[in-house]
Amino acid sequence: MPQKFRCDCPFTSALDVLGDKWMLVIVKQLLVDGMETFKDLRASDEAIASNILSAKLKLLEEAGIISKTKKPNNKKTNLYLLTDKGLALTPILVELAIWSDGHLRDIHPTIVNGEPMALLRNDKAAFATALEKRYKEKLARTKYIP
Amino acid sequence: MPQKFRCDCPFTSALDVLGDKWMLVIVKQLLVDGMETFKDLRASDEAIASNILSAKLKLLEEAGIISKTKKPNNKKTNLYLLTDKGLALTPILVELAIWSDGHLRDIHPTIVNGEPMALLRNDKAAFATALEKRYKEKLARTKYIP
DNA sequence: TAAAATTAGTTGCATTATGCAACCTAAAAT
DNA sequence: ATTTTAGGTTGCATAATGCAACTAATTTTA
Image (cartoon, rainbow over all chains, first blue to last red; front, top):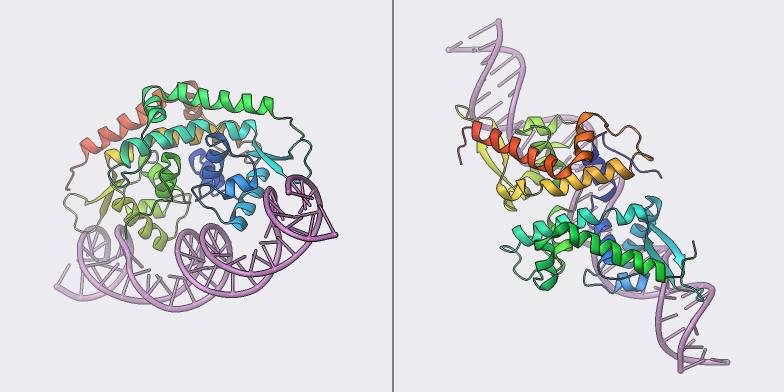
């Protein structure tokens, strides 16, 4: 079924696609945590159930945010990779992390706070660019079978 | 009940608070659309049900993103206003709109596309600053009864 | 000042989304 | 040839969201 949109507002429309508990988390796992298979995503700290993961991967693919392909020389393992449309979500993720860093530590003190967070605070545009660059290099290394 | 967090990831933690269909839409209505009362929010294009609105306003207040106060000289009408923590969500909203503008028009051609979108495209930081400045001026004009 | 309208909700019930545990199939590894 | 692994599906439980009707207090109107 096609995506439903509540109205013509650009803010709201993004949330019609992305506004749930899992969509952006999965994008983050692919972009930031280096995950690329169903198994990777299942085994994450976030602990998504396999039926939910399956459903969300379908939605992400329908939305054009990820593409599903096979690992080279392997008929079993699927690769889930971000498209350009999915990579373009990087600045949103970066802003989410900045807000967490600045405004969530009081109620969630164990949020990670190492070197990468210092980089993020220091120059968010550079942080986003670095994430995108790293991911594009990974794509270039991956023998991509569309 | 206190907020539950899935893990210590700053990306995921923001989504534990904000990742649903309504939280950021309500923040947008307050920040961008100039809404401030229960009635305003109900009457929006997004058409939220009153029980859901009621529940989400409670959550937003518990999270410290909005504060509830009374309209001056009026015992009936409640004002919902963004706190600093809520105003700090502006860059997230701006990035969501940029992504919609650039990547959602193919599947949702009626997304608004006027003068404000041109400003957004041209300088997103200035756009965010202008939104925050306008809101702070509005707060200054509002006789605030905390 | 009494009646009408407005604001800010609540309540009960239906539908949809998410979560859990068990299960299945095909491919890969042993 | 057998076992293990990857990528799911299925059935059922719980939680989130949606709809329509209703209420209570305040404010406006007559």
